[in-house]
Structures are given as C-alpha cells and as structure tokens.
Image (cartoon, rainbow, N blue to C red; front, side):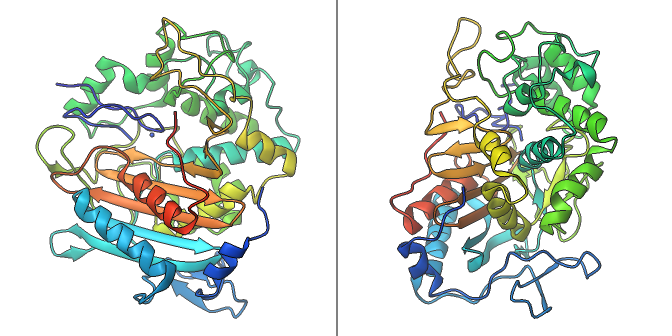
Length: 433
C-alpha cells in the first residue's frame, strides 16, 4: 500500500492513497465596478435564536435568508465565475463544485454544480468537512486570548503542557506557527498504513502526539519551519488549559459565535449534519464513498468541524481581515515570525522544510499567498478553499468533491486561484512554496 498524502498546504506527487485531510483597505476602482452588479451586503451575523441554516442579509431589515443559489447570471463577473467553475468541473472530473464569492460584503454569486450522490443535486446549504479551516479559528482564538491578557505568545507551554518533551523551549507562538520541529505524524508510514487499513478508526490526541514526539525533532524549536499536525493538536490542548473551556466551546465563544457561523460546528463523531455533501475517493484504490470516514486524526479534538459554503465565505472575509483581532494581533496573525524560515537540511528536505518568504508563508493558522489570506483543506474526496484579498475586500469560498477520474491536487483551491485571476488579474493567488 502506497503512503497517504499529508493534509494542509503540502503538495506532493499522486499515489493510490493520494492525500489526507491539511489589513483591510478601501475598495479600489475595480472593486467598485464589481459592486455595481451586486445586491445587498451579506456579512451581518444572524440572531442565534433563529432557525437553522439562515442568516440576516445585512441590510438591516431583519429578514432572514437561506444559503441558496443566487439567480442565474447572464453577464458580468458572476457569469465569469460560473464559467470557470463549470470548466474546472469537467476538466478535473469533479462530482460537485459549490462556491460563493463576495466583494465588499456583497454577494457576487452563490452556486452549486453537479451532484452530492446519484440523483441528489449538490446544494449550497450542504455540509462538508472543514479541515484546517478550523486551524485558522484556533489561531484567531489564541490571539484573542492574547488581546484579553490571558496568554503571551512567547510564554513556554510548560505552564499548560508540562508533560510535553521540551515544553520549556516551546512557546505558544511556535505551536500556532508550526515551528516546533515536531515531525508530522501524517507523514509516518505506520500511521498512513493504519488509516488506510481502517479509515473509520477513532484516534485520540494522545495517540497522535505520541507518534510525533517519539521521533527525533527535525530542528531546534523556533529555528525552522515545517507543517506538522501535532502542533495543532497540542495547541488545542493548550487553549483548553488557558481558557478553562473545552476547545469546541472556546471556538464557539471566541470565533463562530461572534461571526455568526451557525452552520460550522464540531464533530465528535464522523457524522455530518444534514443536508450532507457526500464525498467519494479513490485514495485506497477503488472509487468508494468516503463521506463518513473518521476525521478524528486531522486536528485537535473540538476543532474537527463541518461547515457550509456561506459560513466558509463569511470565514474568508472575517478571518482574512482580522475582524476579531486588534491591529497588533492581526500583524502577528499574518506573520508570527515565519518569514525567512524554511531551510532544507539533511533531516528536513525542501518538500518538508518549505521556504517561508514575504510572498508566501505560513501565519498563525493561515497561509499568506501573495496579497491573499487563505486556507485550503483536503480530506478523502473533499477539497475546500477560502481566500480573502484585503485590498479589494474580495472573498472566495469553494468546495469540491471528486469524480472517479479526478485530477490530483487541491481542486477547490485551483478553482479559487482561477476565480481570483479573473476578478483581479493584478492580484493572483500564488502556490505555497
């Protein structure tokens, strides 16, 4: 059995088991032209007591609207976006493409193409795996605790995680920016084989951390960069100790609640709330349903989430703009000291210790890709992408599922890149690394 692929920003060659789940400015003239074709703002948070699956339209009229497709466009940027999605669906053999794009808080287009499963059309309100989008919530929650004076980024985690090896040398900053030197358990052959053999297995945080901490460090803490899922499992545990709350409750209090993310929630089991966007994968060889394969290993317990496309687009704008953060915290969010790290060594090749540059680098749970703030998870047939361009206030959210001959890579993110190139040719979304 070939090794599984790591989650997150890493991109490697295709294998039969292809992958595992990984300063706002005034709108410019180009944005103003886009806004001329759009409707009411969509960024206002909903009333927590209202019905499920709906949000206020932001116009202040109190009306509530479901996450549904916008009217079919006949011209303009909305039609351009849909044509990009339609071409990509065919080219990449995608079973479904769900997307939502907004500019300055106003909807450009919301649409769903293809099928969830045979005879069941995909819909914008269908739920899918959130993957490492939740890590951007964890980074935001950490920095909110810093803003509140409850944590210090450069404090050793020995106060919170005394049993972690080298806890006196590892800081919260290192956990959040993935610079501890811990190997990624997802890359370990024994782990890959175990997940491939039993994708329904429930993994514990202790099991996952043990895999990484039992291996030699790739480098001294804080001196290099590599993506390791273990960092975020540990960050979740530290956040619980700092706040005195379960991680799911902390994220709800600090992030999902304030942003009105009603359809984003923790999953303590592999279940997905209805309506479900089903996924299918050839990662184990045959093309098979993977919807309810267990995502317990993907990040910290309490941050294993599902969402819908409207919440994903809302997250792109709110997380990408630092809506919940102070200005100093937002600067840490977009560059916590990773720029200049990512040096290949004998123990850490260039595909693992990826160069962190001003143009493309890892932040505090997000990717800075050129002028965009982004995340793009993968998990057994599911792909998603959120991207936000602060200078133009453009938000892009895409979710895809695979057909039997799906092309390799982050298909949702590729679509987001193509949409960005069409809407803002001067601001492309570059690849990471």
